[in-house]
Length: 336
Ligand code: MN
Image 1 (spheres, rainbow, N blue to C red):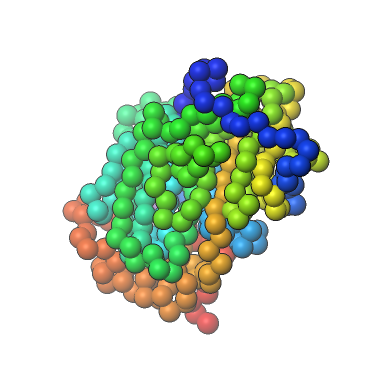
Image 2 (image 1 turned 30 degrees about the vertical axis):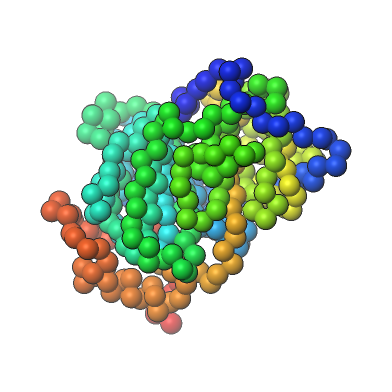
Protein backbone atom coordinates (compact mmCIF):
# COMPACT_ATOMS: atom_id res chain seq x y z
CA UNK A 1 0.00 0.00 0.00
CA UNK A 2 2.17 2.91 -1.15
CA UNK A 3 -0.24 5.85 -0.69
CA UNK A 4 2.21 8.49 0.54
CA UNK A 5 5.16 7.46 2.62
CA UNK A 6 7.51 9.65 4.65
CA UNK A 7 10.11 9.46 7.37
CA UNK A 8 8.00 10.10 10.47
CA UNK A 9 11.05 11.48 12.34
CA UNK A 10 10.97 14.64 10.23
CA UNK A 11 7.25 15.33 10.55
CA UNK A 12 5.25 17.41 13.02
CA UNK A 13 4.03 15.23 15.88
CA UNK A 14 0.65 14.85 17.47
CA UNK A 15 0.38 16.35 20.93
CA UNK A 16 0.93 13.87 23.79
CA UNK A 17 -2.28 13.38 25.81
CA UNK A 18 -2.41 12.54 29.52
CA UNK A 19 -3.42 8.90 30.06
CA UNK A 20 -5.45 9.92 33.12
CA UNK A 21 -8.08 12.58 32.71
CA UNK A 22 -8.53 12.14 28.93
CA UNK A 23 -12.02 11.06 27.87
CA UNK A 24 -11.00 8.25 25.47
CA UNK A 25 -13.74 7.13 23.14
CA UNK A 26 -14.79 3.48 23.37
CA UNK A 27 -16.06 1.40 20.44
CA UNK A 28 -19.72 0.64 21.13
CA UNK A 29 -20.34 -1.14 17.85
CA UNK A 30 -18.19 -3.05 15.34
CA UNK A 31 -19.59 -3.90 11.91
CA UNK A 32 -18.04 -5.90 9.08
CA UNK A 33 -18.30 -4.35 5.60
CA UNK A 34 -20.78 -6.13 3.33
CA UNK A 35 -19.49 -7.24 -0.06
CA UNK A 36 -21.33 -5.71 -2.99
CA UNK A 37 -20.79 -5.14 -6.70
CA UNK A 38 -20.64 -1.63 -8.18
CA UNK A 39 -20.39 0.03 -11.60
CA UNK A 40 -19.33 -2.36 -14.35
CA UNK A 41 -18.80 -5.10 -11.78
CA UNK A 42 -16.06 -4.30 -9.30
CA UNK A 43 -16.21 -5.74 -5.78
CA UNK A 44 -16.48 -3.35 -2.88
CA UNK A 45 -16.75 -3.79 0.87
CA UNK A 46 -19.36 -1.46 2.31
CA UNK A 47 -19.45 -0.98 6.11
CA UNK A 48 -22.30 1.54 5.75
CA UNK A 49 -25.11 2.11 4.92
CA UNK A 50 -26.37 -1.16 6.32
CA UNK A 51 -26.11 -0.13 9.97
CA UNK A 52 -28.18 2.59 11.68
CA UNK A 53 -27.24 5.49 9.43
CA UNK A 54 -27.63 8.11 12.18
CA UNK A 55 -24.43 6.64 13.66
CA UNK A 56 -22.54 7.64 10.50
CA UNK A 57 -24.15 11.11 10.05
CA UNK A 58 -22.86 13.27 8.25
CA UNK A 59 -21.50 10.37 6.19
CA UNK A 60 -23.80 8.34 3.94
CA UNK A 61 -21.66 5.60 2.48
CA UNK A 62 -18.16 4.16 2.64
CA UNK A 63 -16.92 1.84 -0.10
CA UNK A 64 -13.60 0.01 0.25
CA UNK A 65 -12.43 -0.78 -3.29
CA UNK A 66 -10.04 -3.75 -3.33
CA UNK A 67 -7.33 -4.33 -2.61
CA UNK A 68 -7.52 -6.41 -5.79
CA UNK A 69 -4.87 -7.61 -8.22
CA UNK A 70 -6.33 -7.13 -11.71
CA UNK A 71 -5.17 -9.28 -14.63
CA UNK A 72 -4.68 -7.41 -17.95
CA UNK A 73 -8.07 -6.32 -19.34
CA UNK A 74 -9.90 -6.90 -16.05
CA UNK A 75 -9.97 -3.48 -14.32
CA UNK A 76 -13.41 -1.91 -14.11
CA UNK A 77 -15.02 1.35 -13.10
CA UNK A 78 -18.30 3.27 -13.06
CA UNK A 79 -19.26 4.86 -16.41
CA UNK A 80 -21.39 8.02 -16.68
CA UNK A 81 -23.96 8.35 -13.90
CA UNK A 82 -25.62 11.21 -11.99
CA UNK A 83 -25.45 12.51 -8.41
CA UNK A 84 -27.32 15.20 -6.48
CA UNK A 85 -27.37 16.43 -2.90
CA UNK A 86 -24.02 15.33 -1.41
CA UNK A 87 -20.24 15.04 -1.99
CA UNK A 88 -18.14 12.07 -3.11
CA UNK A 89 -14.55 11.71 -1.91
CA UNK A 90 -12.42 9.20 -3.79
CA UNK A 91 -9.02 8.24 -2.37
CA UNK A 92 -6.80 5.95 -4.44
CA UNK A 93 -3.79 4.25 -2.83
CA UNK A 94 -2.85 1.80 -5.61
CA UNK A 95 -3.76 1.80 -9.29
CA UNK A 96 -5.68 4.71 -10.82
CA UNK A 97 -9.08 6.13 -11.67
CA UNK A 98 -9.70 8.68 -14.38
CA UNK A 99 -12.45 11.10 -13.51
CA UNK A 100 -14.52 13.16 -15.95
CA UNK A 101 -17.57 15.19 -15.02
CA UNK A 102 -20.21 17.40 -16.57
CA UNK A 103 -18.74 20.61 -15.07
CA UNK A 104 -15.46 20.07 -16.93
CA UNK A 105 -13.72 18.82 -13.78
CA UNK A 106 -11.52 15.80 -14.05
CA UNK A 107 -8.12 14.23 -13.67
CA UNK A 108 -6.18 11.15 -12.83
CA UNK A 109 -6.51 9.94 -9.22
CA UNK A 110 -3.55 7.77 -8.27
CA UNK A 111 -0.87 6.95 -5.66
CA UNK A 112 -2.48 8.60 -2.64
CA UNK A 113 -4.39 11.34 -4.46
CA UNK A 114 -7.93 12.33 -3.58
CA UNK A 115 -10.73 13.63 -5.71
CA UNK A 116 -13.42 15.61 -3.99
CA UNK A 117 -16.58 16.14 -5.98
CA UNK A 118 -19.43 18.23 -4.66
CA UNK A 119 -22.47 17.08 -6.61
CA UNK A 120 -24.69 19.79 -5.08
CA UNK A 121 -27.53 20.67 -7.47
CA UNK A 122 -26.50 17.95 -9.91
CA UNK A 123 -23.57 16.45 -11.75
CA UNK A 124 -22.84 13.58 -14.10
CA UNK A 125 -19.50 11.84 -13.92
CA UNK A 126 -17.56 8.78 -14.94
CA UNK A 127 -14.96 7.01 -12.82
CA UNK A 128 -12.91 4.60 -14.92
CA UNK A 129 -9.45 3.02 -14.82
CA UNK A 130 -7.24 4.61 -17.51
CA UNK A 131 -6.66 2.51 -20.66
CA UNK A 132 -3.01 1.97 -19.75
CA UNK A 133 -3.99 0.47 -16.38
CA UNK A 134 -6.69 -1.73 -17.96
CA UNK A 135 -4.05 -2.99 -20.42
CA UNK A 136 -1.36 -3.68 -17.84
CA UNK A 137 -3.54 -4.82 -14.95
CA UNK A 138 -2.08 -4.51 -11.46
CA UNK A 139 -2.91 -3.72 -7.87
CA UNK A 140 -5.96 -1.52 -7.27
CA UNK A 141 -6.92 -0.18 -3.84
CA UNK A 142 -9.02 2.81 -2.85
CA UNK A 143 -12.01 4.16 -0.99
CA UNK A 144 -15.04 6.27 -1.79
CA UNK A 145 -16.79 8.20 0.94
CA UNK A 146 -20.11 10.02 0.56
CA UNK A 147 -20.49 13.14 2.71
CA UNK A 148 -23.98 14.55 3.08
CA UNK A 149 -24.80 18.20 2.46
CA UNK A 150 -27.13 20.08 4.79
CA UNK A 151 -30.52 21.15 3.42
CA UNK A 152 -29.18 24.69 2.92
CA UNK A 153 -26.42 23.44 0.57
CA UNK A 154 -28.18 20.71 -1.43
CA UNK A 155 -28.48 23.16 -4.34
CA UNK A 156 -24.94 24.53 -4.19
CA UNK A 157 -23.23 24.58 -7.63
CA UNK A 158 -21.12 21.48 -8.35
CA UNK A 159 -17.44 21.77 -7.43
CA UNK A 160 -14.39 19.67 -8.13
CA UNK A 161 -11.18 19.50 -6.03
CA UNK A 162 -8.18 17.58 -7.25
CA UNK A 163 -6.03 16.85 -4.20
CA UNK A 164 -2.58 15.57 -5.16
CA UNK A 165 -0.84 12.96 -3.04
CA UNK A 166 1.73 15.59 -2.03
CA UNK A 167 -0.98 17.94 -0.80
CA UNK A 168 -2.10 15.76 2.10
CA UNK A 169 -0.91 16.94 5.52
CA UNK A 170 1.54 14.42 6.96
CA UNK A 171 1.91 13.96 10.70
CA UNK A 172 3.58 11.53 13.05
CA UNK A 173 2.30 9.94 16.23
CA UNK A 174 4.02 10.95 19.48
CA UNK A 175 6.71 8.23 19.27
CA UNK A 176 7.08 8.19 15.47
CA UNK A 177 5.48 4.74 15.14
CA UNK A 178 2.61 5.90 12.96
CA UNK A 179 2.24 8.05 9.86
CA UNK A 180 -0.98 10.01 9.54
CA UNK A 181 -2.21 11.59 6.31
CA UNK A 182 -4.85 14.27 6.84
CA UNK A 183 -7.00 14.29 3.70
CA UNK A 184 -9.66 16.74 4.84
CA UNK A 185 -10.59 18.73 7.89
CA UNK A 186 -8.28 18.88 10.91
CA UNK A 187 -6.39 16.50 13.12
CA UNK A 188 -4.99 17.98 16.33
CA UNK A 189 -5.09 21.44 14.73
CA UNK A 190 -3.30 20.38 11.52
CA UNK A 191 -5.46 21.09 8.50
CA UNK A 192 -5.72 18.83 5.45
CA UNK A 193 -6.25 20.12 1.90
CA UNK A 194 -9.89 19.09 1.31
CA UNK A 195 -12.37 21.95 1.62
CA UNK A 196 -15.55 20.57 3.09
CA UNK A 197 -19.03 22.08 3.17
CA UNK A 198 -19.86 19.94 6.20
CA UNK A 199 -17.25 20.00 9.02
CA UNK A 200 -15.42 16.64 9.06
CA UNK A 201 -12.05 15.03 9.78
CA UNK A 202 -10.76 12.37 7.39
CA UNK A 203 -7.33 10.77 7.75
CA UNK A 204 -5.45 7.60 6.75
CA UNK A 205 -3.07 6.27 9.39
CA UNK A 206 -0.39 3.61 8.90
CA UNK A 207 0.51 2.24 12.33
CA UNK A 208 3.64 0.08 12.69
CA UNK A 209 3.23 -3.28 14.45
CA UNK A 210 2.93 -2.64 18.19
CA UNK A 211 2.74 1.16 17.86
CA UNK A 212 0.04 3.35 19.37
CA UNK A 213 -1.78 6.46 18.18
CA UNK A 214 -3.43 8.86 20.61
CA UNK A 215 -5.17 11.81 19.03
CA UNK A 216 -7.54 14.51 20.19
CA UNK A 217 -10.95 14.47 18.53
CA UNK A 218 -13.67 17.16 18.63
CA UNK A 219 -16.25 16.24 21.26
CA UNK A 220 -19.13 17.31 19.00
CA UNK A 221 -18.00 15.07 16.08
CA UNK A 222 -18.96 11.43 15.73
CA UNK A 223 -15.99 9.06 15.31
CA UNK A 224 -15.55 6.02 13.07
CA UNK A 225 -12.48 3.86 12.46
CA UNK A 226 -12.33 1.58 9.41
CA UNK A 227 -9.54 -0.97 8.82
CA UNK A 228 -8.05 -1.10 5.29
CA UNK A 229 -5.51 -3.79 6.19
CA UNK A 230 -3.93 -5.46 9.19
CA UNK A 231 -5.21 -5.68 12.75
CA UNK A 232 -5.15 -3.85 16.02
CA UNK A 233 -7.27 -2.70 18.93
CA UNK A 234 -9.29 0.41 19.60
CA UNK A 235 -10.26 2.30 22.72
CA UNK A 236 -9.08 2.05 26.34
CA UNK A 237 -10.65 -1.43 26.54
CA UNK A 238 -8.60 -2.64 23.52
CA UNK A 239 -11.46 -3.85 21.33
CA UNK A 240 -10.02 -5.92 18.43
CA UNK A 241 -10.50 -4.49 14.93
CA UNK A 242 -9.30 -6.10 11.73
CA UNK A 243 -9.41 -5.67 7.95
CA UNK A 244 -12.89 -4.84 6.63
CA UNK A 245 -14.29 -3.86 10.04
CA UNK A 246 -15.67 -0.49 11.13
CA UNK A 247 -15.81 0.66 14.74
CA UNK A 248 -18.40 3.21 15.82
CA UNK A 249 -17.06 5.09 18.83
CA UNK A 250 -18.98 6.66 21.68
CA UNK A 251 -18.59 10.07 23.32
CA UNK A 252 -15.27 11.54 24.40
CA UNK A 253 -12.56 13.92 23.29
CA UNK A 254 -9.78 11.60 22.08
CA UNK A 255 -9.10 8.36 20.21
CA UNK A 256 -6.56 5.72 21.17
CA UNK A 257 -5.62 2.82 18.92
CA UNK A 258 -2.82 0.28 18.90
CA UNK A 259 -1.54 -1.97 16.11
CA UNK A 260 -1.18 -5.65 16.97
CA UNK A 261 2.41 -6.84 17.57
CA UNK A 262 2.19 -9.21 14.62
CA UNK A 263 0.50 -8.28 11.37
CA UNK A 264 -0.76 -10.55 8.58
CA UNK A 265 1.97 -10.90 5.93
CA UNK A 266 -0.34 -9.46 3.28
CA UNK A 267 -0.78 -6.22 5.26
CA UNK A 268 2.88 -5.42 4.55
CA UNK A 269 3.18 -1.95 5.95
CA UNK A 270 1.37 -2.45 9.27
CA UNK A 271 -2.14 -1.57 10.38
CA UNK A 272 -3.84 0.80 7.96
CA UNK A 273 -6.94 2.58 9.21
CA UNK A 274 -9.18 5.42 8.17
CA UNK A 275 -10.16 7.84 10.93
CA UNK A 276 -13.32 9.72 10.11
CA UNK A 277 -15.86 11.86 11.87
CA UNK A 278 -17.93 14.97 11.47
CA UNK A 279 -20.60 17.19 12.85
CA UNK A 280 -23.90 15.30 12.52
CA UNK A 281 -26.48 17.14 10.40
CA UNK A 282 -29.49 15.53 12.13
CA UNK A 283 -31.76 16.18 9.14
CA UNK A 284 -34.17 13.77 7.45
CA UNK A 285 -32.49 11.70 4.71
CA UNK A 286 -34.32 10.52 1.59
CA UNK A 287 -32.05 8.55 -0.74
CA UNK A 288 -32.51 6.73 -3.98
CA UNK A 289 -29.56 5.34 -5.90
CA UNK A 290 -27.23 8.26 -6.61
CA UNK A 291 -29.49 10.98 -5.13
CA UNK A 292 -29.62 12.02 -1.47
CA UNK A 293 -32.13 14.70 -0.46
CA UNK A 294 -34.30 15.51 2.56
CA UNK A 295 -37.74 14.45 1.26
CA UNK A 296 -39.25 11.84 -1.05
CA UNK A 297 -40.70 14.64 -3.24
CA UNK A 298 -37.17 16.01 -3.82
CA UNK A 299 -35.99 12.53 -4.82
CA UNK A 300 -38.83 12.18 -7.32
CA UNK A 301 -37.81 15.61 -8.73
CA UNK A 302 -34.21 14.41 -9.03
CA UNK A 303 -35.22 11.25 -10.94
CA UNK A 304 -37.47 13.31 -13.24
CA UNK A 305 -34.76 15.96 -13.76
CA UNK A 306 -32.29 13.20 -14.64
CA UNK A 307 -34.69 11.54 -17.08
CA UNK A 308 -35.57 14.85 -18.77
CA UNK A 309 -31.94 16.02 -18.93
CA UNK A 310 -32.44 18.92 -16.47
CA UNK A 311 -30.22 17.54 -13.71
CA UNK A 312 -27.13 19.18 -15.20
CA UNK A 313 -26.60 22.32 -17.24
CA UNK A 314 -24.73 20.80 -20.14
CA UNK A 315 -24.65 17.22 -21.36
CA UNK A 316 -21.13 16.15 -22.43
CA UNK A 317 -20.79 14.73 -25.99
CA UNK A 318 -19.46 11.36 -24.89
CA UNK A 319 -22.32 10.82 -22.45
CA UNK A 320 -24.19 7.55 -22.46
CA UNK A 321 -26.20 7.60 -19.22
CA UNK A 322 -27.32 3.96 -19.02
CA UNK A 323 -28.87 2.95 -15.73
CA UNK A 324 -28.41 4.52 -12.33
CA UNK A 325 -25.92 2.72 -10.09
CA UNK A 326 -25.38 2.81 -6.33
CA UNK A 327 -28.84 1.53 -5.40
CA UNK A 328 -28.86 0.11 -1.90
CA UNK A 329 -31.35 -1.42 0.49
CA UNK A 330 -31.43 1.96 2.26
CA UNK A 331 -33.15 3.58 -0.73
CA UNK A 332 -36.36 5.49 -0.18
CA UNK A 333 -39.28 3.57 -1.68
CA UNK A 334 -40.66 5.83 -4.42
CA UNK A 335 -43.73 3.71 -5.09
CA UNK A 336 -45.51 4.12 -1.80
MN1 MN B 1 -20.31 8.32 -8.67
